[in-house]
Amino acid sequence: MKNLKILFFYPIHIVKKIFIKYISDEPFADYYNKFVVEEGEYFVYTFINIPNISSFPKGDILYLETDEDKSGNLIFEKFGLKHYEPDKGYIAFDDSDLTFNPGEINSQFTNIRPLNSQFISNQVSLTFPGKYWTSDLVIYNDLSDNSTITVPDLPLVNYKIKYTGRYQTNYQYDYAFKDVLLEPGNDCEIIHKEPVKLISPIENAVNINNSTDFIISDDNTPGIFIIDVIMYYENGYEDLILRFFTSRRTFKFSDLTVRGFEFSPNRKYKWCAFKLPEYQSIDELVSSHYITDERYNSLQLSEMRTFFTGP
Image (tube, rainbow, N blue to C red; front, side, top):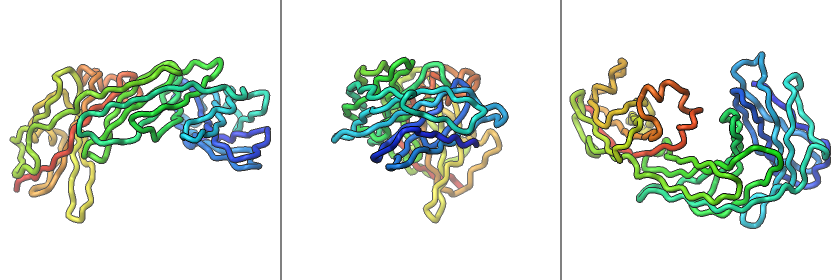
């Protein structure tokens, strides 16, 4: 991991919230993109993780200085975009590098969740076409299902607004989502598909064994299902022990043990199902790193059910 020092060669007179984001078309991961800068401070550190430490990815540093209005919407006061020279451990911004008061564009966001699903806060990001996916900059991470927000009007930058609508079921370890990319200022309405349904085994089914059928149901459109299995311990601790990928809506309990995994007898387990609706087959899924694939733009989620293995 490499630390990158961001210098401000102009005075910070009052407390400011500043976004710093590395943007590159090469793989990397960065940390600490949002900073609260106190009066008199003139630098922050961000940390960048790269696969090959001997070859730092070429890229640009995006700088956004913000304030908030009474409703919590961002006011964008300063903007800069500067190329980073990999042989340096720092980059400096002064007045000549910044656009003052780049402006805001209002946008309405609506997230329509499935019936009986649970709220989880939604997200809005700046995304940069053609750049590595970790170049996205999250500017809102706590939106309600109906929000009026401001997004920045950035000059001379190719960017879009990524709206991420989310929901949860009673499965607390993950959530469903749907991404929509729009031009800045376009209103966004996200309508989620109905969640995957667990048909069998029923809730609290007992004596589950290798011949037991596990059945899930959906809208019968193509997609890949992800089966999560949670093991329950007597002390109340729970652990995700298995993630199983399949294109089938019906499978045997024995299919979950095909790679040598073994379930304990007389044990309590929980399970749920996700669906990746943009993939037609397992071959399509494994032929790409799905987390970085543009088709990985939505995820449907079932409820969680409990079952007990037999002796």
